[in-house]
Amino acid sequence: MSFSFLDGMRIIDLSQYVPGPYATLLLADLGAEVISVEPPGGEPMRRFGPADKDGISAWYKQVNASKTVVEIDLKTSEGKAALEELIRVADAMLESYRPGVMDRLGFGEARIRDLNSRLVYCALSGWGQTGPYRLRAGHDLNYMALMGGLVTSGTAETPVMAYPQVADFASGVQAAMAMLGGLMGRDRPGGSGEGCFIDTSIAESVIPWQMWTLTGMLRPGFGVDRAAIYLNGGTAFYNIYSTKGGRFMTLGAVEEKFWQAFCETVGQPGWIARQWEEAPQTALIEEVRAVLAEKTVEEWEAVFAEVDCCFERVHEMTEMAVHPQVQARKMVKRSDGEDPFIEVGFPAWIDGSPPEARAPVRYSKASDIIADWT
Image (tube, rainbow, N blue to C red):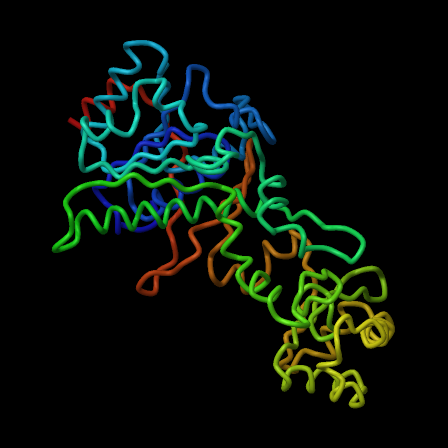
């Protein structure tokens, strides 16, 4: 574990793949004890991604680090009894089934409340527990498509998908935050002392990020035209430019002082007054592109070494991992050996200390966990 804020908190994770396991990874980083309940043979994520020598995916191990995995067949009476015992003594539980599955397994909301009224129960589904899409299949790309995450992202010609998956990871953060809120509401002085049922979805994690665009639709000049959006390639001061040699530089000179510094450094003071030309700023973008194409990223970095204007190269992943800023923050730690991997820590320092390394995923028996918890 990284920190100790949630020491003593016991969390059951019935989810699979990325959103739910990422949520409980964050809770484990904060000190919670997380028991990942998987079907016999393990969840499908064990076989997705680069396999270690033991045949289990390295990606699976990363998103389940610091957790204890138990295999329980919830279709059997023995498996149901084991989950009941865990629920009775847990603080929180997260599951990512489609709506109705938990009811069919005998663990609907009312039944869970009978087992443990203090349990904070989070159902993280694709579309939510209600609505016409509640039982519809979907993945990150589909959620992004329907909820506005794609229509504004990309070029004038086509939307462009993001990687890693935005909705998957955003919903993990959302679920973890909601569960923390539920735990705090239960336990704080004056709190209810009771748990709650949290209904959230992967798709819904995308909508709040569209608040500017949704309001912009109501205002002249701030619509949903990908080519004209200020922060999506419609302006010269906030754009990605190719340099000599094919590498890319990013310019994020939103503030006028940064744009002025950029223009003066490249010898184009005439551009300063053109910062807020109507988007899309096609002509100005082409002028900037032509100038930046004259030098390599290394040459531009040398030119801008002492200039404060939000001008950075697009780093390759290998460059990012060893960058002095990343290393100074101790965010990325490489481990070589038979199964090499890179661990990315919890993105916060507490009281001047960086996060500790995570423990590897552990495997146990349900009976052992129940004996330990009770």
